[in-house]
Length: 93
Image (cartoon, rainbow, N blue to C red; front, side, top):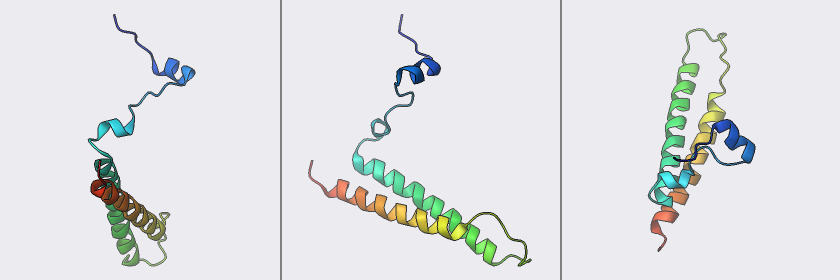
């Protein structure tokens, strides 16, 4: 019989419920590349949202999403994560 721990008990004892994120990837480069790809996808969605906001039919129909800061933040995060992925890929083991 294996020891079963409910999420409530795990939180009480301070144990991690989710596996370590680095265990899901083969290397550091794969982790950083996946993070960069995710950030790039978010930046593309934000760019599309900003493009649609700029071309809306009613100029007074203001939305609630700040698409430009979301785009810039995601693009910055993608650049940093891409740099780390490149450094991890080029570094000798």
